[in-house]
Length: 301
Image: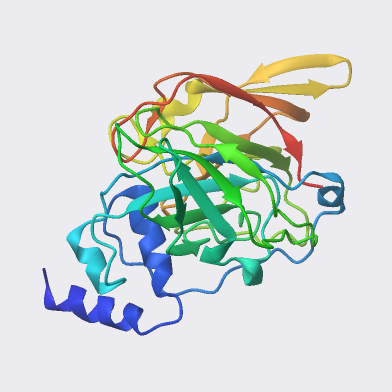
């Protein structure tokens, strides 16, 4: 372990955003030292969000007793703890996220509290719907976590409360699935990132973007970021006038930022209504492959 690594960990430990790094470790199972950054809110909350129900879409038992030794520099009891990414139907008000908002029940009925909860690393504008829960929730395979409930007043950006929402937990051995999808275009006010980490689809070639949110962090089967080999695994059904067409993205964007959001860049004009991913397109940090699933695509606006 290098001296530079220890210095970085010490600085992060003394920062207000210490727990963000734990979230990164949990979702992706690797040690990556991020730069400290502020949570990025989009300039306005879509009005359409006010008509949608505040609920849990997925909760994924991502890692069981698997936080590595390096995590001790972040949280004194972190080594060997569990991680559970949770995807919500609405963007979250970051000021309302607290570990005490959640309860997790294991197979034998034991109810566990959560030691820490963070939006990191999915904290960019148009994200903010994935919370990583950190703690001890029972052990696979004899007594794994089976359900999670929101018991505190966690709120979306529209003010809707998630309190009382409940869902079953996706088991450890199952692969990742698509949890949420929405479409949008680049407006004048869109916080466009032209290049670098997490950059957007190329503005000149892109007609529509479909953002897909996975139940947890994913990579291509070869362990790399999604690329050309995976494009045909994704199919977007679009409506254009009286016609229905099925298209593949020509490019992936919002990559290399270590979160569970991926943008599908489309060069066809139309309204996306569903997105489908074929099986074995991606793997999670344990190497589990995804199963085929299809989702309705929501409108951002």
